[in-house]
Amino acid sequence: MIKSLILMSLLAILPQSAKAAEPVTIAAIFAKTGIAAASNADTLAGVELAVEEINRQGGVLGRPLKLIVLDNRSTPIGSSIAAKEAVQLQPMAVIGADWSSHSLAMAPVLQEAGIPMISPGSTNPKVTHIGNYIFRVCFLDSFQGKAMARFAYDELGARKAVILKNIDEEYCLMLAEFFLDAFKANGGHILWDGYYRGKAVDFEILLKKVKTLQPDVVYVPGYERDSGLLIRQAVSMGIKTTFLGGDGWDKIFQYGKEAVEGGLYSAHWHPEVPSEKSIHINKIFKQRYGKRITSDFTALAYDATTLLADAVERAGVWDRAKIRDALSTTTDFEGVTGIISFDENGDPRNKDVVIIKIENGKPVYFKTMKP
Image 1 (cartoon, helix red, strand yellow):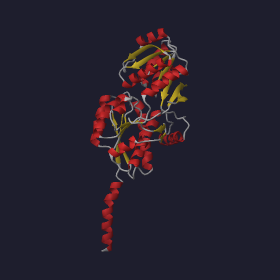
Image 2 (cartoon, helix red, strand yellow):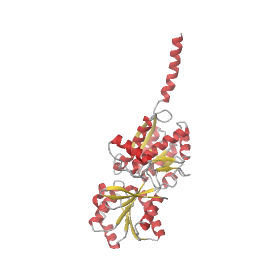
Image 3 (cartoon, helix red, strand yellow):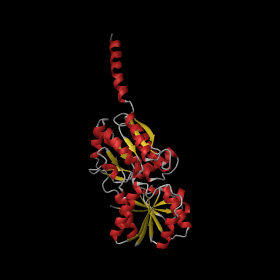
């Protein structure tokens, strides 16, 4: 009789214990195919690294994380479709996207569904304005555009600039706008504000005009492919200037080759930034992938995922609305890429910008700029 009672008690306990240990699903939406796939692979690696580490440490609130990766196919339409697929799968939260145009397409879908979304690297200010379930861990285009304009004027002594922007990407248009306004406000002169299509491979008409203008700097706030090809052609045409870019230049050497030597761009982080968090992620990334981190987006994605775990712990329950509330009150979260405290829009306050210089085919830490 006693044995039967003990067995019955154990059976009553088992379902509850099994439920407590059930994985909790989170989704990651990034490009696995298309033109953004190469750069997004580094971002996804950061999410996977964080999820594996969290699970090794016992999960969140005693439950392991189950990561589902959805492909946005490098397009806004694909991003919207992936977000709708995520809604059907009902994850507790979504990490993504990387490119601003992708996040702008995803955010309305996830906002309507009440699913918290944390973008690692979408810098367009409009992203988080879509709703109160949308957050990011990166600085905004408004800051990096202004910071690069100030750097060009103060540090490089540039007084004449040309802007060449990818008209098909909202990210590029916003960066160009903020750089233009800030450079003029600092006292500089914008000789020309030109544009090209995102899939362009021949920039000769644009570059002929640049060559006649002889600017001190050319700001190319595009992604690595279009910016790299443009600069490569510019150098082959004998244009001598300093090329500047934004955080979309992450893998530009793959396309620009030796032509991008000496170029400078704004970034969120660099492996050589001295901090305990940087040392830690460099160590575990090397153990996991057998190589060094080559992208600041890896660190941003790691931060987005660990910040989500931190918010769940503070919420004390796996509930989307309460996780959103906890995210909105994030203060002094110590991330790899800096201290994160959210403002009323779900944007980090006062994050630093790191200036990177391309030397010998590698991104080299140059300096950190405060807001």
